[in-house]
Length: 208
Image (cartoon, rainbow, N blue to C red; front, side, top):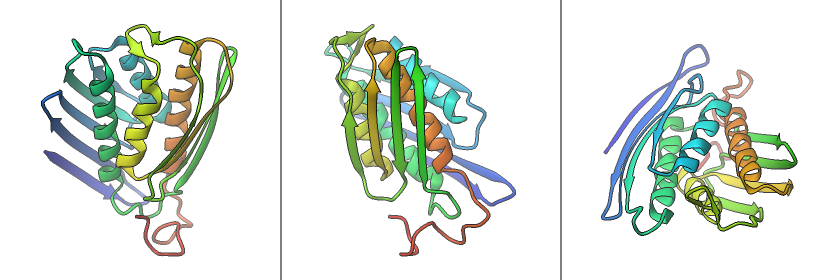
């Protein structure tokens, strides 16, 4: 179920989407407002994941509501991956034809001893390069290997080229936090409307 609201003009932005996804493994409802203030209401049943999504929302100035029920008695994999799928779909729907947006975004974010870089191209061509190592299997009740799987799901469903790299760091919580904050900031840069852009930022005339 999808509900989409777009008013993509230079003087008044309202880029929103609501998507529901229900499978035998998860039941997810997600609201997004690309042109928000960084407000969020997150409940996935995975505390650390909720924390990361709150950080993404806050640092990306994106309003985000997520309610997810998943088969956590199995593990966290399905819930985290499926939230990534729905978030990617919502970003894609909210942006529409991407007219006027800058398309590219980049951010470096430090978190104490850790430094992460995220670069985004809202090209319509899904691709993920992920270069980050975690020394622990879990961060709280979150499987650390799911950081990569979450961003793969986002990238392939949003149609974005996404490069993520942790340049250095020791604490896995800090590494993940730096990544999610940097993703928010890079996305905020990529979705900004620039008055100098006529149509889309591509010589092809489309971004898909």
